[in-house]
Image (cartoon, rainbow over all chains, first blue to last red; front, side, top):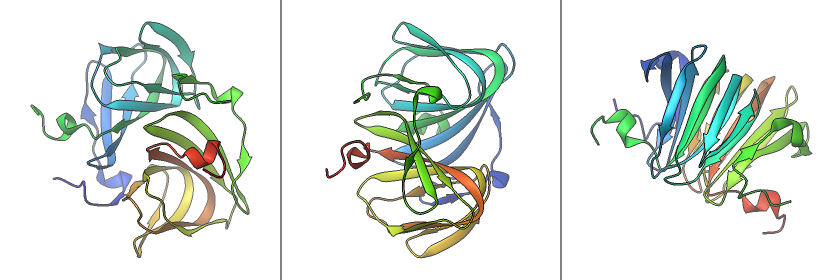
Length: 116
Length: 116
């Protein structure tokens, strides 16, 4: 279902989906220009280095992560945040099981329409 | 300090600032295109109806809020999220003390350079 013109997204209505080994994600509110996604990492799970043209900003909701952006790595804990410039290579190594809140601008069409 | 070209923002380095009666905010990571802001509401505090050209998406981190967007109101709890179109009138009434995570695109220059 395309819900990009729906302003409200109730968590109880949304499902987790697989997003890699030990990683699941839940797509929260979105519209063309922006998308909010919660990403849950099991202990030791990895978000492999990758890049995309979308600008990303993320909050560590809980847990501990080593985040690498353009070759620079910092250890982040709950409440810390980061921004990924367009096309910058970035990745996450989970140190203690946790959750990231990722926000993308524009929205990740590939998350709702795989193959696009 | 302008930290919009700094990809990492550590929560311990950031300060809460007043943002209305019973409301404080902390500016997290940002760059020109996007800004993440945590907004803390004391019990019963109100975010009065207002609008701005920036698109906003928000997550209820904790607490309970009645959120109104373009005249439609829904009650949101932790994990729920919403998106505000450009220039749409929106407001928040806090029902149970809580925290919103607001993300704006583009960034809110007025938050770091008052008067702009």
